[in-house]
Length: 233
Image (cartoon, rainbow, N blue to C red):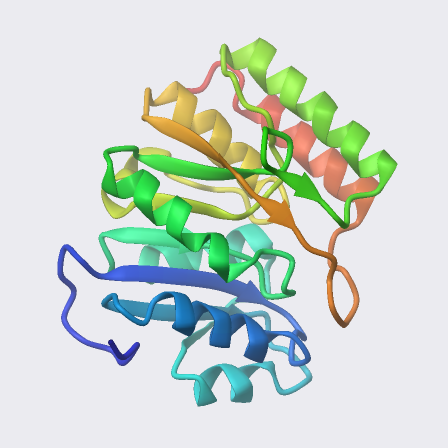
């Protein structure tokens, strides 16, 4: 079915993609999403950080609904998820690192009754073709910290390929404006006793353009997110 705007219904799936200067990648991402969703009712929301390239033009050409937010990845994701009209929400990246072909697992996880479904690069069947040794070590540390402090059982922490029931967004009450957003989701899902499923995912290498992640500053933001959520309900 088309991704044209229409009335929301329980079968609508919303795909939310934060983007900044991803003109060389976004077209292929959207083509892949549309192929995967061809038998479903869906909408695509691209939340653009006021790109200086042709990201917006390409997104609109592919029928995406474009919103704007230049505060940070978390802020953009929150805006897109809150604006989404589907009963099932999917978040993914705009740089071709998250493969649209894997979207079926994330959607099925929600359909069978889970509240949040998270792609994992570090469970059986998953891997990363892009992560550096330093980033991998940092992710392992944050996984250990969150699992220990919040009685969780995650295998991955800093990965944005996820799906949600629309109805749980109010419970998550997301606040993080930057790269701490995935960690906030993981922590609040546990603290709100949500049903969480991890599924294997293969992270691809960025095809073109500059990565937005800054290892140490974003790592500090993730640590700050963990500390802020200690003791909070």
